[in-house]
Amino acid sequence: MYGIKMVPIDKQVVVSGGFDNDVLSDVYKLDCVSSGCTWQSMAPLQLSVARNYHVAVAVPDDFVNCP
Image (cartoon, rainbow, N blue to C red; front, side, top):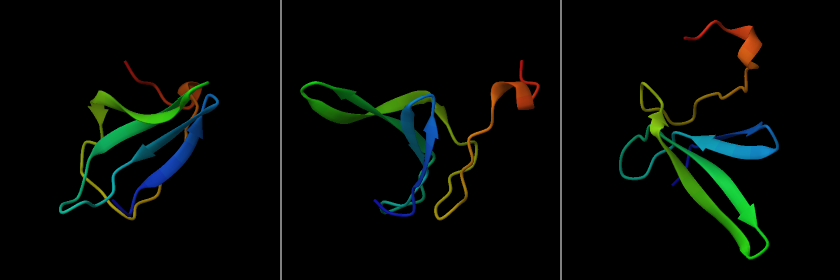
């Protein structure tokens, strides 16, 4: 997989998009415990449009008005 973008959110790392035989819309977070770290899908959360080599910016909740 390549072309993903990574952002820090609330002391976690989140990656989105990328390319792996096709453009992806998946979103994953890195979960770490004492035994190691694994990527966990944040499904059903995903990009509304699949992207690779995009720009990702963490935006505070109070910056937008979402239901």
